[in-house]
Length: 478
RNA sequence: CGGGGCGUGGCGCAGGGGCAGCGCGUCGGCUUUGGGAGCCGAAGGUCGCCGGUUCAAAUCCGGCCGCCCCGACCA
Image (cartoon, rainbow, N blue to C red):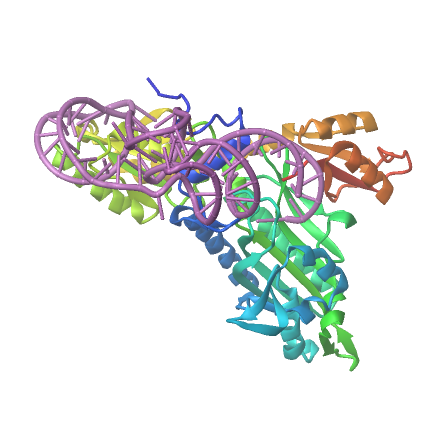
């Protein structure tokens, strides 16, 4: 009965993840190619996912007391150059503005690749006293990094994000901020997007250019490759010194502030597609799905009562859920079922003449669990709420199961290199923290040290045999 | 940035010196509607861009641009 075969037009996920990914992004109408190299147009359906992420985060930031502001798109070259490590890290990817109209500029302007260098000068101006601290501001916007190769959502020349920039009186307070943000991001990923993550610090070689250290959230995609899902940087006093951001402390001495910065990007939408999609297309977690419930009325053209009832049901459910009533006359129910599955709507309600007679509707979850389930119209609201929660839970459990079965401990160098090369997932090894050991493992595997979790080291370094000083998860990466 | 592939109606493709075609979609009409409906009719293309060869170029040659896939580098 159930037409469970793959959807036309898109390849099977396990046969070619890349081609499947591109096809799903386009066919689900999340995104389209722009007529300029390396750039994407995020379409309304895709953008509404981003808006759901924004809404949730803004709620969190309201609770924590962060404020939102807007800083310039342009950064004068001399500002970008003030922090040596920072400019060295970003210079190769900067897009430069050299003319205003036909007039050459006296100083070229960077299109922001990240905004520390335009925000810190403002903080220098605004911060005088310890009483002005902390400053905790974020902005929503886009940045530009001139990438050589691009992929929809995962790497484009311009991408959308929020970036938080905070300044604090003490190092402890700044680090606490980093960890607070990290926890918010973790709850976003796991609770809202149903994507479990490994959390910890980046090794020195992978930290943000200009940071003292970087906290990261790493997710695992179905091909066994890691993807960075969010970062939170402890910047120490590097930027405070470079931009002269000082305050007069209680003890009447002048001190540099301690700063942090942090971000998540529209890349998360790509991670969502990869993590949850299947041969039938996209599959969105209920908590961020732009449409949580689609109502498909059946035989409504010759049975006006069906459409009336469907409209009433939609109005009722809209009080609590994001609902779409698909009353287009030009498509058959079967066509709509396939279409909304392709577009990832987590829950469908079918309502036809037979259902009306029995005062019921048919509930169908996107993952097929429970099949087609008749539910009395009188209790449908509760049934929908319960099913949406159940779908959300199942999605997270499936993803967690995948992460667990693809996080593997390696006790020998041979085992580690083999597992990393094969892209089996996160490979947990003991490490002496020596750069040469890291380099050797990278060179031998093509993998990267993705994250150092807060787990006590034990035993010996998998490369050199010296006493271990850290646990590190290696993986190939996006 | 290397290696491979591809640019022809909205989408997917065929064609390969001389009329630009097919399927899907779109528009109109009628019949349909519980897993991608049927029939009839219609509209829609400077064949990615620039240059060259030729009486004649979608087709041959050169250059450029863009996209996809696989690697190497970065959110």
